[in-house]
Amino acid sequence: MTITCISPVDGSIYATRSTLNEFEAAEAVAKAKVAQTAWAARPLTERIELVRAGVANVGAMNDEIVPELAWQMGRPIRYGGEFGGFDERSQYMAEIAEEALAPIMLEDSGAFKRMIKRVPHGLVLVVAPWNYPYMTAINTVAPALIAGNAVMLKHASQTPLVGERMARAFQNAGVPADVFQNVFLDHKTTSALIADRAFGFVNFTGSVAGGRAMEAAAQGTFTGLGLELGGKDPGYVMEDADLTAAAETLIDGAMFNSGQCCCGIERIYVTESLFDAFVEKAVKIVEGYRLGNPLDPETTLGPMAQARFADLVRSQTAEAVASGARALIDPALFPQDEGAYLMPQILVDVDHSMRVMREESFGPVVGIMPVKDDAEAIRLMNDSDYGLTASLWTADAARAEAIGDAIETGTVFLNRADYLDPGLCWTGCKDTGRGGGLSVIGYHNLTRPKSYHLKKA
Image (cartoon, rainbow, N blue to C red):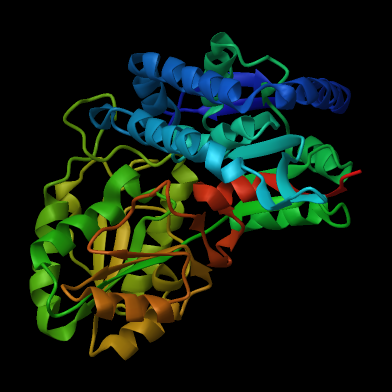
């Protein structure tokens, strides 16, 4: 089978790669498992330094990576790629590794030594998405390697060059080739490997349907799964919010990367007294965007990764308008709106009967609703199948924390949005998935506890 990357820039074939057959894939797994034993036996400090060197090698490639990303998934070159977050996350995980992976010592007396160690799963499969292809991959790759696991990286077919670059960077730094492998696999082979217990842990970032496929493949194997799936993240603007900051941050959170962000803002609730003013500011922000070729430094919105993704958002928007919603952005401002190039849109007079307020859009559209009070906002924020992040806007931190306690979500933001803090667990609930990455908890998920009860002679 051949994997083909169709560039959203112009519809051309940008890259093709052949997938491994089942025999080749099984051979790659066998090599990784042999290499992992020696890798785990290396001192932790050595593994940390090799991972850091691999990260630095990726940074040295950034001038080549940025236009590659534009061609593969459409992000404008003006934003400079992902190395800032890529580096921040990996360096943080390197810094906390010794403490996070240290044994829990219960007793070390003349009679007994009792402790709990954290040991690697063995081989970890990382299935990474195309929207932030470097940052989402490094969330698991760096701590998995540091913890002593071997890693197989299966990247999205839209971004096939990313896994190749990462593997090359880490291998050039001294990480053994069999310890960190980039592989091209079709869905059938991936499922067969999981079902055959090839992996000690699988981390998948992608669609809800993809997560279900992972669970189906792992059924009965007891393989650990980390799943980050869909999202419909809300913002809530209260009466004492900094309105300008709220509008700028929430609209950027909704539109950046053409709305293709895991924790992008997809619906906004504004207290009635500020609703009109917020909407006015939001419209002005969006009217200032420039949709176009991502290789043009003046472009602020590039194409979506595939035309079919753009068509989904178009259909959600059209259905909402047909049901009474009002679209506030004039299409005349964005004449390139066709195919994968999708104009941004703000919708008002929306409600939760509309798909655009319930289903994941993953594109540059956001619905804005007025609310009477906190209770209504909480009810609406929780009226979703998803739970990744929520962004609250108020000067009262205690109020925000109390509201956060009532929201079904993985992360609560106050006066910010769309940011992944590596010191906090990246997690979700409901159809957003299970497990947690980064932070100390990320290391716990990438290892297993092993208890020692040693009676001394």
